[in-house]
Amino acid sequence: MKIRYPVFKSLLALSLGTFGVCMSEFSMMAVLPEVAESLSVSIPEAGHFISAYALGVCVGAPLTVMTARSRPLRAILLALMVLFIAGNALTALATHPLMMTAARFIAGLPHGAYFGVAAIVADKLVEKAFSVLAVSIVIAGATFANLGGVPCSTLLAHLLSWRMAYALVAGTGVIVIVCVLIFVPKLPGLRPTGFLEQFRFLGRAQPWIIFLAITLGNGGMFCWYSYVSPFLTDVSGLNPGKMTLVMAFAGAGMVLGNTLSGKLSVRFSPAAIAAGMQGVLAASLLALFLTGESLTAALFFLFLCTACLFGVSAPQQMLLLQNARGGEMLGSAMAQVGFNIGNALGAFFGGLSINAGFGYAGTACLGAAGAAAGFLLLLIYARREKR
Image (cartoon, rainbow, N blue to C red; front, side):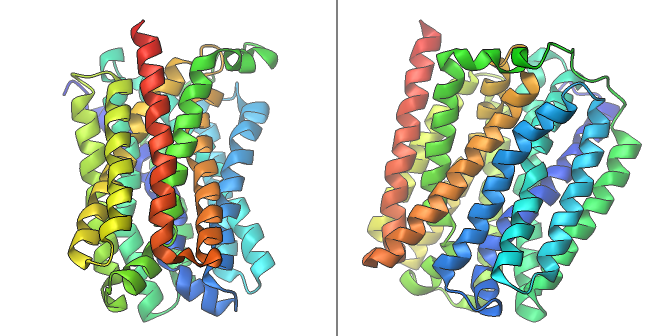
């Protein structure tokens, strides 16, 4: 790996930011039953808090492009972290469903923009051949959030309160600000290209194919994963007290998937890696529907799903960045917008499936269909690029 040590430290500082951002996002899924009980709402209704966060991501990314596209990149990262701290502190203090919805929306605002700006910084710090690897290091923070951060939040929720978990998330943002100030070099803003020029790349088909593939694929995953805790306890028979260990196990899958994706990027194109892992994800969700009553099978396919979820992240992030000439910040952030529109739609349709009487198992079947659609779109993109 030809990434110099000072650059590696910068990438780790950026990775700590994705750790905090994804700890905020995924902790809600792990503590959803506790939050629902605390705020006196049903679990499907509490799923709307996940959707509110995702909608915040979708609003925050283009808003950042409009207000800060030519500002110094490090300054943008710091401003986004301040907003992150505010949103998660409000989450910890929320006492009413509407207050929680607003807090999750605010917490989601910096998510997509942070990933987008961090990916651009990572790309600028390394040689072109190592761009996907550099982005995978940044995204690694998200996988370690699920390996260690989310289980820690789950444990805090069980031992003390889910509010303490989100106080911890907000505190993480303070550490990120310090690390970015120390380790991330000052870089100039992106070349001013005019407001409309930022959106010109959207006139081509390729970015939209990738964006739809991300949205549908992630939507399929989160149709099931938004309700992973009640699925494992009610369908697979998991002891609720072991949920912390299971979330760590899922996080290990994410670490493995992201690491494998980075290593494969040296030999294969981002499109090939993304399509392959998306196909495995669709098959794993279908297998969960068919075999989810077996705890062993459910845990095995949970591991595969989470590995593929983060195995596709860095390749898809780079595909959008490569197809966004003149609008790199928006293109890079669009990956997270797609991920989180998928999150919102997945949680929403998963809740509808549960309320319609298909139970938690039905979310895996519906999710498999969405993931399969994302896989087909990535195949279409790969064939177009090959021609």
